[in-house]
Image (cartoon, helix red, strand yellow):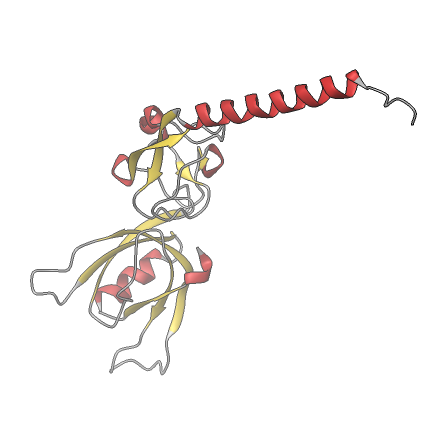
Length: 199
């Protein structure tokens, strides 16, 4: 039998690979123990809507290198707007924040509505999108409802009145239709239809 040929270079390479894998594993384990303070969204924020400090809370997460926004930056975040609709429990990243908003810029108006049960969905939240519909009263010549705003942003949800009969909702619409919405709202002829797929 011929003598078995030894390959010290391959053996050394195998040892180096084993040591490298062990070192990488050790570094990952050690790094997973590093915790940083980040921002998690605690209230739904609609696309184009301003952040508030009340809508953010602090959370400790592992430092994975992902660009989460640090908790120390919360005051600066509160001066900006959401690029997309952000649901509660979402860790905030830089890509979710923009410095300007089309929803609250020129040509927009905030309209306050006082609605009765049945005129607004019970599941409505800040940041939702709704259709604003004129519902003709009994003395009106109109026979069916008419959409006044196709996709209005719900800016704020108020608490029901003391009697529980009314619900306050503030929406953002084009300023061109806001007078008409206000007029119909004062007559009790406004209803909101939620658009879950438009978030």
